[in-house]
Length: 286
Ligand SMILES: NC(=O)c1ccc[n+]([C@@H]2O[C@H](COP(=O)([O-])OP(=O)(O)OC[C@H]3O[C@@H](n4cnc5c(N)ncnc54)[C@H](OP(=O)(O)O)[C@@H]3O)[C@@H](O)[C@H]2O)c1
Image (cartoon, helix red, strand yellow):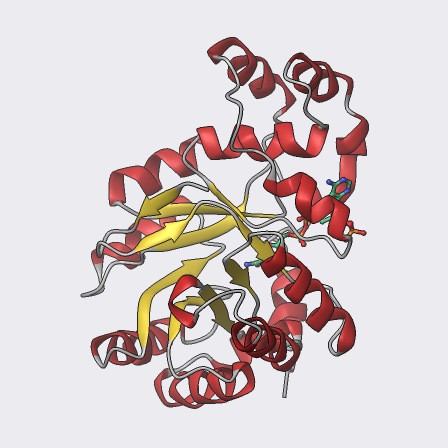
């Protein structure tokens, strides 16, 4: 495992485990327990995933069986659009850490830059100042939004979690993040399985040179671009496979070849579609 230093000096694991679309209850609990057993220390959830309680139970179980200590873990959750605004975000944070069974959070993210997310940031700056969160960040900020946000806030986001995979590489957005000192974190590092990503001939042939699977090749490619990855899987063998990416390095030629896969747009979400914004803005999580 490698770590990346955030703009406030905190070290963040370069690979973590995402739990989007893992059903709440025993399935999430088992997945997170398995992930921690496989060596994952960063767990990425969100109020909107409706599984924070099960994540919390898994964390408690792995601490009590001696696998990890709280300080070894890097727990991320996110405030949903419904709770945008200062007072609302303070309450949402309390609800999230209660569900997670934690007394502090490692990373708290604005899930979508929608509604009063500047108000949310005021609350997050306060919680960060009070030591209840080790780092604060954002998600889904396109470069112009991130630039504006960084110019008009006291605390700069430590992380911007955006869709980053071989079919949506966002090189320019990463460049802006780098210039601003914001660490890029990839959601959907496998494009959520779309585009036949695990059977892509180019990815397969690059991986074969190193005896690695397409999944390992894809994760390694993002890591070598300085991007944190949080792959999701409910299968323990895949969790192990996805963690086994620290013993090889793609050549510069392989990295360059991968750039040909970029479609330069998302086929998962369209933040520029008013209907999508309307749907997200009306989504209730409590
Ligand atoms: N901030 C945001 O707006 C946002 C949006 C989306 C996601 N996220 C975060 O990013 C995390 C990752 O993204 P994601 O869950 O959307 O999608 P993803 O990680 O790109 O893809 C997950 C899919 O890949 C499959 N898979 C995983 N490892 C595999 C392997 N080695 N071989 C073959 N198939 C494999 C999984 O299947 P199985 O589970 O059946 O193995 C699942 O269908 C999320 O869990 C969440 O924490 C954040």
